[in-house]
Length: 113
Image (tube, rainbow, N blue to C red; front, side):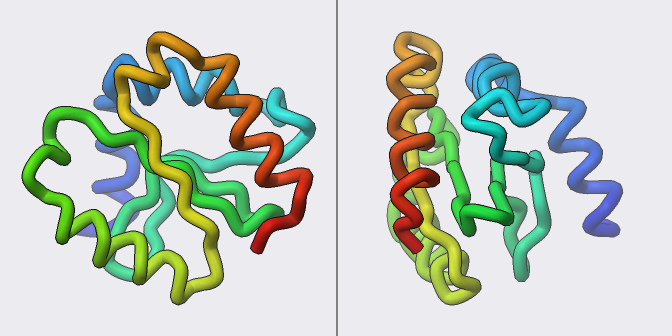
């Protein structure tokens, strides 16, 4: 499948946690940093990407259970492209979006790259 078509499908079929995260970061709402959703990087689609901060935010739901090795390889690949990768469980995004936003903003403002 074409990467653009797949990225559009992933953006259209968001989980509740992804919708919550997108509401938090869209339109430069988080410290003025611009985020993109479902950005193709190498063979993966990163959930949320801030190019200026070289940050990838990945949300892990039930589909990630038992796939720790896959997620580790994915993180390693994204780091090879120069990104810092933050992972959050869906439950935490839904229960504490403000705390998640604070953590992301701290990383972006610290310039940890």
